[in-house]
Length: 338
Image (cartoon, rainbow, N blue to C red):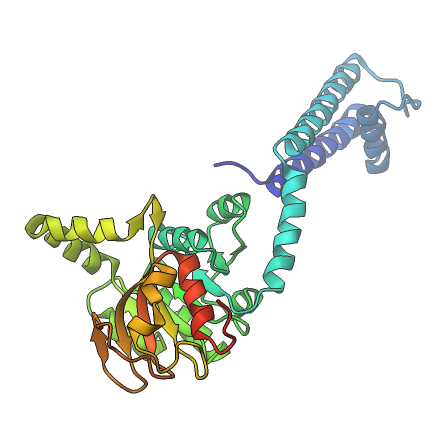
């Protein structure tokens, strides 16, 4: 395992202290001197300053002095090598980058906290990065956290089940949290802590063991996802209905660009409020596909026709490119900004 700069620094310090201790004891024995004299002889020998010796050295004392000098020069050379290696490996840049990242994390608002950067968490991170969502990762493994930081992803190395770490991640200013820890117990603790710190937080949690979804929801999760169950269902469909899965994969991509499902609310006094779909010309103006419409307090109506009304406060589920979804949100707002 690759050692951190701090660990390398401790190694150098331990080598120096050990050499000083050996030299002091050695001179005390060889010259019958006191502790102070032995320490003095060791220091002037290691530093090669050329001060006078406290006593004439015997042949054994001279050989011992040669050993101390060579060992001291070796440790100094090793220290310089590690310092240069630290600079070459970008250690200084990593320190400045880390400080900039800490400042970025402290200023984040309305972001999402991703707890855990394992297989599931990595997929979440990939999607959030792809659609340019503001998020912070909390990962307890230092090597993985360093890897994310080197990739420019805001990350905190710590335990996502503790209050201090979640507070550092800006839990009070966050709008959501995805808990992807390695077992259900850790996810429950993380959800309980987060819910206590921010009662309005929207929480989605990974469910690992069968039947754990109810426990996670009782702990405070709004939604739970079981990657194992979803993967099993998809494998079954690939075996039984491969054409359906292939079609779903195809319609989520267009011109090598990922398509998104988005929810757009028609606000009061917007330019399309109370219009029919054919009069609003949404597909023509944005290229989006309207999959469903839900009126305030009403049921979800799939595949709405051209004569379907868009009452104020209704929500549209649309499929298309992210920038087009944002365009529709501007049209559906009361700012009338097309």
